[in-house]
Length: 417
Ligand SMILES: [Zn+2]
Figure (cartoon, rainbow, N blue to C red):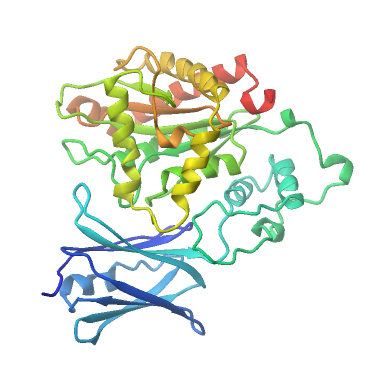
């Protein structure tokens, strides 16, 4: 019996473009790449052409960084061949996902650039004029990274030269200037809008998606932080695509963030549940059942968003866990307390103190990390607030005050080390 395509989705982003085929049974796919011109060819076994499959052709956006066009045809009986014409050479990851949540079986094509993007480049590009991270970039040029922050395919050769080397953003400095004191660089705050792409996060009664709200709040907070003297913000995702939890952590470490803030919106079965709450990492049990269930739900993002378990991602996540320190958690509690008391001035609090549980995204061993549940998107009144730009601004301002309060009382964990 031939499988049926239920939906096709595309998630174009600079970091990588994803194509998802959702179907009612698990299908085997084989793939290979061709050069001159660059193409990705995917053969799907057990499939016949259908109108849903044809939809994919029209879903490729002109501004997709990787895909120029798609051609689909019946290659052999029961084998559909997709040819993706590429705008640049890619390192593809093709994998399947079992049914989870609302989704049935998924076949996922992730198109990564052959040269992995470095998050430092994004920061440097956004501050070309002032170049506040010159010392970080200088350091990077001197100590090229041995590993890339994005998932890599086994056996795939990654260039050892960082892409930053060709950027004009790090002006050459005399050697004497190359080692400034750590305190001379701006305080860097990694903002992590939860979910994205295949993972919508929680959905409100009016259909509001958590992933959209938290991205909007994060962008507002980034603007506020960037306007502060000697402070800069970095977004772990700045568009609607999925970033695996441990990659969010890796990105924050790559840019040497002084603080990591994951931004979310809560949900509960009962629409009456309401209020903001803040969480820090626990390595041995949660401080409450609520915290434990919430961590479980947020950690499921990887299953819904879809990560390639065939790659070495799992191992990386495990290493991060083992390295976590009590100093990180102590500072997380401090900054969490500051932000909680500020948010308490603009919204009811769901929990009066910072709670703790085993959130995967809070496991950077050396960066104080908190997860902010801004409000309940499942509560009709709070969903309305979360949709309003003035309330999003209020949340961002409260978080900024909490953050600056923390840095005023502490030089930050990395700077004390
Ligand atoms: Zn969430």
